[in-house]
Image (cartoon, rainbow, N blue to C red; front, top):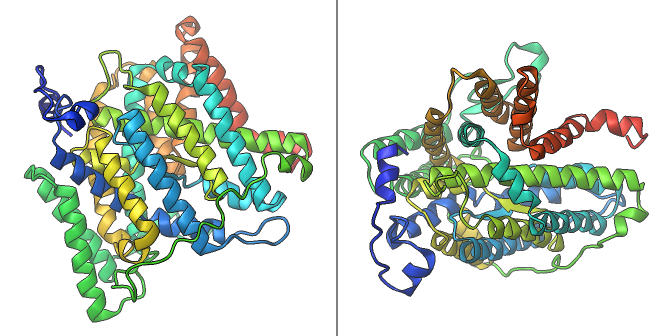
Length: 483
């Protein structure tokens, strides 16, 4: 979003609140409207609704130590329930357009790294412990203090890196970019389309969606992102009804046999808080919890900073409004995810789609959360949006977040190099946490080399030390004989 737009979004003299709801969420004060908040809520939901399909696939495909698998239908219910409840709580308590759901990456760690060592109940218990420990860090003020200790240009770099990351996710999820299975036989790890060329109707839907989205944004059409998602979904429905295409991916744009489905809450409450300690060594349990905490901690930090900055909500000191409550709710979401067996829930970078649509307050979360609540009963109808129709929004949002790059002084190497590494490592390793870690370590190192070690906040020293452990987790596990 351009700077003039941001200034317009937050006028010097805010108009009076139209009603109590407006006053509570500060909709007019933040230069927004109810219509923009509603559009933003819909846009965020449609860009992250894939989690209702993907999370059950990831968790449901894995087996625990005893060969047990989680029920996919129950996983859909648990995923939707946690996303609905925690997104609404974030909207009311944090008043930011920041939706939450089961975290990708974190669910893979739970499914393929933790569950094989213990029962599902024990694995989800570790997720609950992780969430509780994060809440302790928030209550003690440590988590918020770390966020405030980050230099402004590095915060901007985090936002830019997330922009590139989210755009890359859009390209990959739509099939515009694909992984090459046998990387050793080629010079590149990814390629255009499935075979090095663009082919098939789904890719056409995505490409048309990107063109439509950027055209509408360039024309400054209100609701550009949501208009594109809805339009291309209908185009995909028409194409699929005529051609009966099998290569849409996770979600096929076809009218379902039934509109409603009965939710199954069978997984809610299935966790054992300390059971893991009886299944494996204490060192292994501690390392697993450490991995979960660090990933969740910094994924959320990057997302909150990036989304808030893009929305133009950072104050004069670069601080996030209601940060303490936001971080506490995010920690509680991890607890809720573990307690429901849907894995740790966390803030979603796809919330940027809602911000790009104009959302500036937690009212948008009421819409997004309401749609997830509706998904408990209307999953068949709400999951007809293919990624090829939703992914163009991620590409467009990537551009909007990229504009924060102007806040980085590229002639000042002591900040430019860490900023570059932060921006580059995020999309290249498919991880927000990895990008932040690389930037922190480079920042501390360069400041030390230049004789400016005293300028580094002590919290950044401590955090960088933790990142050294994080990046060296494999040799550490081998050293202690836990791998």
